[in-house]
Length: 432
Image (tube, rainbow, N blue to C red; front, side):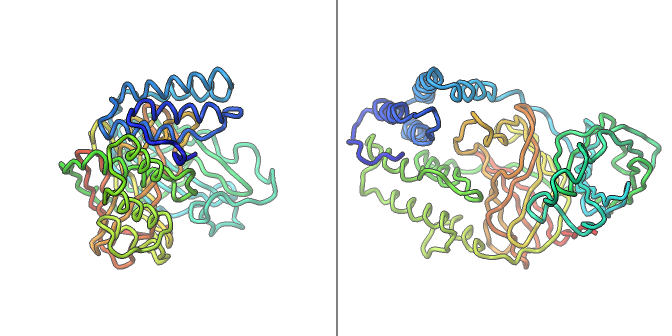
């Protein structure tokens, strides 16, 4: 639903309630998209026309009304309440290893995708495939290899594995989230006992695996940034709120533009509006557009490319506090059409926005990046899991790395501060 056909009104709360009424009237079983009301709520707050408590209070009234009509909305409302921000957990990374040689176990090829040594134990991301698919890489092929259904037994990976380091420390690691399809599986393991981060090798159920040379984690710092005008910041947030990787829904940017005019925050001929519409159109189409402001012009420069380098690099850097968020960045994986960042965040609800009932507001942390060839990048949540306190997963960019770039600066950006993590791309190594 859009705002077209609604007469211009000056009272912001009335305008917001009319959007909610349209949603309620057209509910039809509770499956209508709530994007319009959420956007208008954010417009009213950004314009200073309503305070956030009042604006969210209006939305909650109508969510409650929809929940009374439909069990689907009852579930959504309860889940949304359970997703309220929780206590921040301190994240740590003593060492991260990637690019680890594959090994054979029980007739399967196993891959240790990532190994993390942290204060709370040892974390392993594992995958496996039968010898016929020994060269397959599930991550690079866009998911699990699909063959005849039922070709692998229930839980094709062990539920526990025994770990050992070169200091003689042993630990039992338990399987967490995982999945499989055809002849390929993927899962994570975690042991509550930390192995030595200095170890040159580890054993997994008696199989010794040599680890790559340990390189120091990239240096991290947090810097202040100039706060943007609230209206422009809100509109930029709407441009970046759409899941461009999996297809967008309603035109939230146009809804926002019309709402600012409708409540009298912007004039119809304000030059900001055509600028925002041009940026949104260019990002949606992925086409470089002359005259765009930065960082949008640099962002679009690589959208149509598919020449990214192939490989992974361990990072293992931690930002203890970025506007109330703790971030652990584990590794970067580059492919021809995009790159991915594996990470963890606490509170975890910031990475779980795709779940039913999660608020679909623009993210509090935007994952910008820039290389040493004047290209800009932005990454969005792709595959994540966890709970309200802590979530882990990966973010994936909309464009590939420049093959001639020698370093990438990851820039998780809030409203007043941003983190800076400089990753040397010369360290990219393909999996042996």
